[in-house]
Length: 130
Image (cartoon, rainbow, N blue to C red; front, side, top):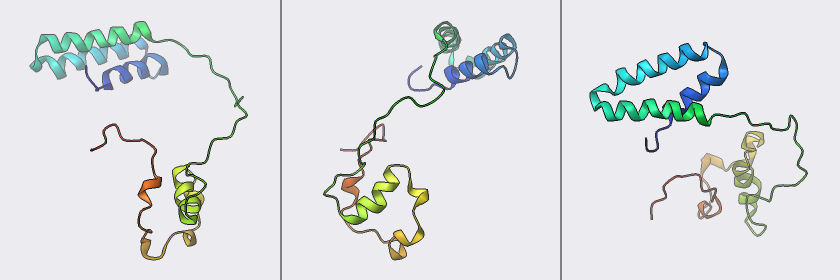
């Protein structure tokens, strides 16, 4: 199946959401797999159908707390010796609080100071060019 997870996620969604009766939803998913992948050969169809079955056999309920139970603080998204712009603007954006920044915090004409990209290291890309 590789990196494509749409069949697995769709199976999970319909198995737990009750949007449609589970068996009806799974029948539609399987029909769609046959219709979509039959031109690629029976092996591809069978792998996708097996993915649905494997998904159902490995689907289980996770019991999680209904409220936050931790009491630790997250570390700062940028280092303490960062320039003020990086701490006060980029750091807030990196931390996911950029929507709370006033427009006046941003540089005029949206021209960022040079060399600020070195502070933005969230490792959010799957592949990084070298």
